[in-house]
Amino acid sequence: MRHKTPLRRRRLAFMSLCLTLSLWTTAAQPAPDEASPSAGTVSALSLYGTPELDEGFAHFPHVNPDAPKGGTMVRTAVGGSFDSTNPFIVRGTPASDVSLIYDTLMEANPNEPFSLYGLVAKGVRIAPDRSWIEFDLRRSARFQDGEPLTAEDVVFSLDILREEGNPFYRSYYAGVEKAVALSPHRVRFTLSDTESRELPLIVAQLPILPRHYWAERDFTRPTLAAHPGSGPYRIAEVDPGRRIVYARDPDYWGKGLPVNVGRHNIGRLVFDYYRDRDIAWEAFKAGLTDYRTDARAATWAIGYDFPAVEEGLIKRLTVPDVNPSRMQAFVFNLRRDKFEDPRVREALSLTFDFPWLNANIFYDTYRRTESFFQNSPMQAEGLPSDAELALLAPFRDELIASHGSNAVFTRPLPIEQPEALRARLKKALELLYDAGYTVEDGTLVGPDGAPLRLEVLLYDSGLERVVQPMLRNMARLGVQTSIRIVDISQYLNRVRSFDFDMVISQFPQSNNPGNEQRDFWTSAAASRPQSRNVMGLEHPAVDALVEELITADSRKELNTVTHALDRVLRWGFYVIPHYHSGETRIAVWDKFGYPRPFPEYGMDLDAWWVDPERATRLEQRR
Image (tube, rainbow, N blue to C red; front, side):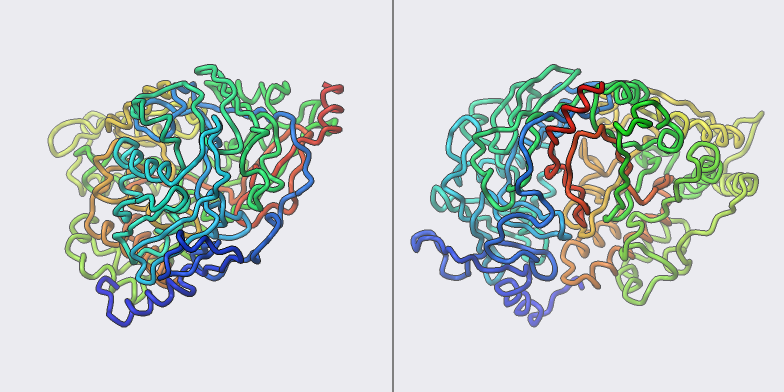
């Protein structure tokens, strides 16, 4: 898979023109002076298969094109505060959902796994050899201050994100050599990575920033300014640390486009900040917020017994997960010597007693998460296939050295561990003894003579109930443990500077993983502040598998690579996995309309609306 044959290169070149990205042609071609003769102009991109919507579609199938406009949705933002309206930089804590003010070149259809349709871009061309992609921009596109959106803004956006933005963007757009404005309304991206199926779609989702605004300002500094975007909402109110309000722009240039019809209906989107989940819950019960995602099983099981629920003023919805179940886990900081030995990591992972938590705290509503691609065909199971072994074989020595055994090659998944806590702790102690630890006066002491100490860093006190039982079990082994709860700003600063033993982190996956995996797992991201590689993993096998994943040219090949990657990650015991429910639990005050059934690949809150009659009736009853 690593060395592409000339035959495959010719096939890729042909498919890029025809169906590699499954493009369909628009009826309206660009003017002759704007079109590149070497490629046909099209209007939609799809990663696999063909886009579902016919040319000239009026709106996405799931929306209500006649949805009323106006009203307010108040949501909860838990985590303390924010100090920036610039979400693209390392410094500062960005406000919730500030990306609402930005448009992209193309827009995803929530009813398809990964298909994009024209937004700022009305047409797109891809070179037969996949060395470039061009976009024709709509002449009507405008920023919220009235300035026209041009190709220069698109070029500026790519450049400033890579040069001055969060280092994530340098990795995410690593396959893009440069962007050039060929005319005021035509932009070309030159691609150095011609093998990645996903890269053209990633480029199409580039957020577009106003060059005329940011060129004279320091992009790297946090700001609380209501700076202009080109999207359907503008920043209407900034109350630092307390709330941010977005107002629907009645003059939004793109409101009549098919990708926007029936969407962005609610007049004001308000995010109120609460430092504590319990206070946020009380605010919802009192009607101070309208919408909440309920992540606490106990609240969902027994908490909805107050009058507003009994009177039918609150609705509860469960939305099945369509993407792989998110891996949430305790993450070891591998940059610290005490976590270098895989036996230590495995031993500590055995102290997490999920059956007890599920029975005593979660009302048996969860299942244990095992895979980084849980509940999808990308999840590894059983013994590795011949194709997986072929991917892993070049790194056999490195994997055996780093994992302490050949389990990646010879043992099946899921990993078998004792169910009973006593047996788990017994095995954990055996692993620690094998790693050179001893127990002296009830304290676990390492080969260097120092006690094994572990601190869990949190910013949300609501997670203490999950952490404390595990730390009590660790203490039974002689580990010295503690919890440190800090505000969100201090938490982010400590994580960015790698000043922690263990944190809780999440690794969400889509049905089409791609370039973002570099930020999750690779060596290049391990030392980069604010990357998703929180654990600091550096492994040549992982680096190589991520590149294979990005260049996979079929679903079968993608699944094979993710299986191999999943095995390496799971047998490394880099995290202590938590649990998942397989659904999202939502509670809302009954004033909203929304499409049913929900779109297949996302709930699409942008398609919700406020029902005026129900909103009025609700206010009267309140």
